[in-house]
Image (cartoon, rainbow, N blue to C red; front, top):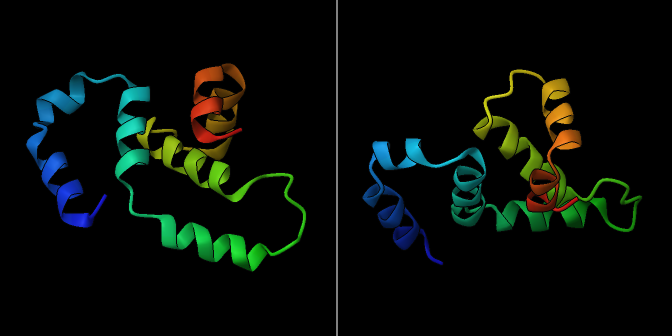
Length: 93
């Protein structure tokens, strides 16, 4: 999806429509429309053949989830990930 179609779609959603969505639905919007592929490729290239205990994409998606879910600490995000199987799956763990 190109940049302009992403921006157009997101601007068509009113603030009210976005606020009525659940957290997972809002996260899905962010993950689908975030233009982060170039960043992911660069980070994966930088990691190279190093340990992959925590996949870069899953970690990045969980950071975005922390923002969407408005967690004010990494510990709160970790507890949410431990508790919420759908969130773990959506992030890629």
